Image 1 (cartoon, protein in one colour):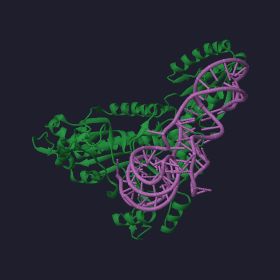
Image 2 (spheres, chains in turn blue, purple):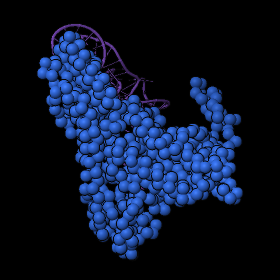
Image 3 (cartoon, chains in turn orange, brown):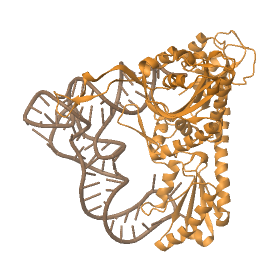
Length: 492
RNA sequence: CGGGGUGUAGCGUAGCCCGGUAUCGCGCCUGCUUUGGGAGCAGGAGGUCGUCAGUUCGAAUCUGGCCACCCCGACCA
């Protein structure tokens, strides 16, 4: 039906791009690798923010804000972290422009205005935050320190994709400090659970919780926990990570505290984050060839009401009913938009809201007024039903819940159907090429084998699932003994 | 960064080989008729042809540089 979206089966990545652009979520900007997030996309991101922010606060965290710039000397303090990000940093070297004497009307960088020390545009904030924490933490009484920041970060990626990998992106980063290793690990696991809860119950996206192999760990972490989701094309997406940082940053920034015994010790740290990449996850979990599909819990507008009328009097009569319906729905905390614009016709509006993924559409015409009915269409299944007016608010309220759970069930069924246990390398390669998805296979536990599999097949170990059942087997690549299966996939 | 492709009105395009000031559709504006799945008719507006330079009497068209985007690599916690 859609005239604008490239079908998934024809070209998945073109389809993805079409959804982002045509559903009015974001657009390429004049800046390389950076996008403009448009109101419809930003509204969804705001819903994600609101939901996550509440979850963070409910688990005892508070928000703060740290600078965009990090002096190079601070940035390089934690060596592994610095090394991990060094290749993708934007660097400020000057602070002033001046008129170009050779070229009237143009500006050049003023060579006189060179900074004594370069500033790194944050690719992540551990360095500046831990440098700050040094001044905030002296005693166990100052702990735990549970802080989150909503911010933008810059990573100079070579190749970018709207929402999935942009040079600048929006995210939240939690940075916590603890007295003990156990407490810090518990914190990082707790936040992983928050992310998984959000992914499954709001994004309606099933995820596998697990931890990363040393190769795939965050630079500077002792352990990286992750939630991994399977997209419609069989590729995996890392949807959120939570890191146990050990004492690495405390040591690099000399953050010590006096414990209850009066002895000095380095604090234990975590950091955790999710980004606007979740928008990509949302798209690639539920959307179809007709456009975006938004899970009701994240839809800025859950219900749109389209009047169908032949005269101004007709519109007035319809509006009277719609206003009472709208109030009843709002009383149930349902967000409703009454699109009574006269500048677009109903058919146009239907197509538009379908493309933009509004979960429920209500149509009311003069015929309905006479019959005491309304027409209700659900975006996920693209079905329509005519119901009695008096059933409307309960019907819609239940329908929203049904759509939310239906989307999750559908995504879960897809993920399950595309998760394969594989016992030989031949079979492994065959699955990757023919029915891509998650692959559970035995691995000998060495970085060498992991690297070789990656180089030969582009598949990586997404994670070692938490609560993974132990099972003796042999590595599909090396034939060496293995004690468990790990989760492989090609990934975004 | 390497290989391939693209860039013409808000969007999608024709023209480019063979140089002479730009085609069509959608959208936009006005009016009337319409309104239950992207309305119809009539009239109208809108373009430094990505950008900079070169060749030429003359460049969308030929040559070179640069920029942006797309695809494939490389890269990516």
